[in-house]
Image 1 (cartoon, rainbow, N blue to C red):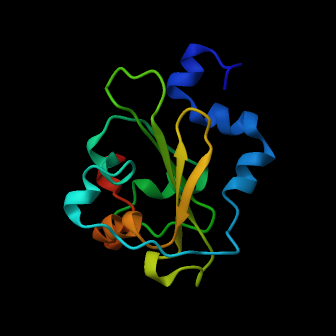
Image 2 (cartoon, rainbow, N blue to C red; image 1 turned 135 degrees about the horizontal axis):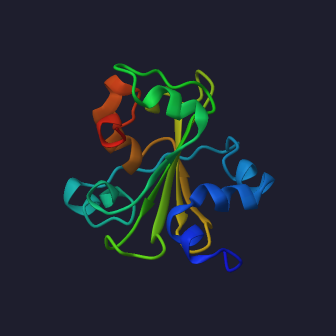
Length: 156
């Protein structure tokens, strides 16, 4: 990320992903080993690095597949949809603390999460911290089950 300009660092994760080339595609490829993570109690989730992202500042990005469905009344996101969100500590933060992503997988990949796989990455170097199909992400996103596990009201 050191070769990016200030504006690219602040608001353009798409640029970062594009510069990563095949690496980012590999990062979001299906895991051969899907490991469930037990959800934490609500009081613990509020301070967890990724679970509290809905109360933080950040920019949300969607690839073309996801973007086409975001404004739908009751979307059903196609396989390959990707939604990525920065988690910034303040409204004026220069770099995200954390990057959260969700990728829609093929039917049957994870019935517990509507076939979504969730990713948590370090914000400074995009190093993968965790990927899951159950756990904190699913425990929250199940509230948006009627809109295919996506809190679309926050994306409009």
